[in-house]
Length: 291
Ligand code: NAD
Image 1: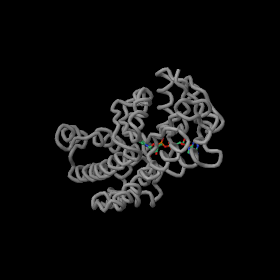
Image 2: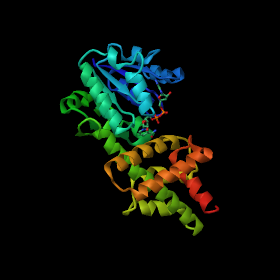
Image 3: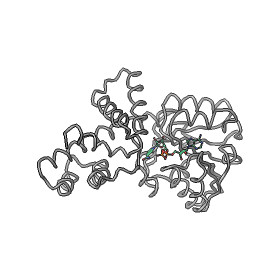
Image 4: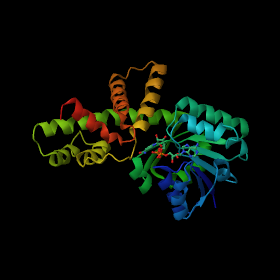
């Protein structure tokens, strides 16, 4: 049986680790706040008291952590996981981090004979729970094939998109599209309300036309119910748009709408809403509109 060490059991990691148990893998998990390990234990996995202990003896180590410095600390830091792994072990980082950091992790793995993939995901908490995530994978093709059974237990659309870092580049593009779309969905809902139109019916018909999207399907109902429980925190989307704007600048690509979306997410965060779901963009449009 493939032995998996899973590090980072938050909104996404907890259901993903549980799905791996469900699929028959032997999973040991670690999270910085230990209460979250309990959910994995209840799902039939094992808990560990450190990242190194979770990775001990694993064939595959999965990380699902907030940001680039977190992944670097766990894999490369003092007593980091990478130096303890047997050659040939696969590390799959599924967090959303900077593409250049993903490339440096892959190089650090190469130097130790450890195979590292960047495999960020899209599909949100529901996608993690239902094992229907889209998983965009950067790294060596043979490592991708070796890790595919693990990824298939977590997602429905699993695609090898290129060399190390390519998965994170595709994820950055994903976050650009989601941020712009979400802002416009929020604006459309405030617009409809100002004109006295029934918004549920409006969303129903919009969803069937060219304006339809997964963002509209999943986030318009949350906005209409004024449910801003994460889901995907504003803080994390702000982090991702920082990645997007830096990567666009590095490549000399103009992203005027994306830059505006990044500013608007940043403003929502600056107003103290970093812990809300990003559907909270609605609140800012309402405020700007005096509603
Ligand atoms: P989260 O904050 O809920 O979970 C992260 C977990 O990592 C937390 O439980 C935290 O305690 C733990 N952690 C942090 N540092 C640690 C360390 N050094 N060692 C062990 N555990 C540590 O975040 P999330 O929403 O699960 O997102 C995780 C990643 O997935 C992020 O990069 C995010 O951008 C990405 N993502 C999130 C969503 C979403 O809808 N929430 C969707 C797609 C991608």
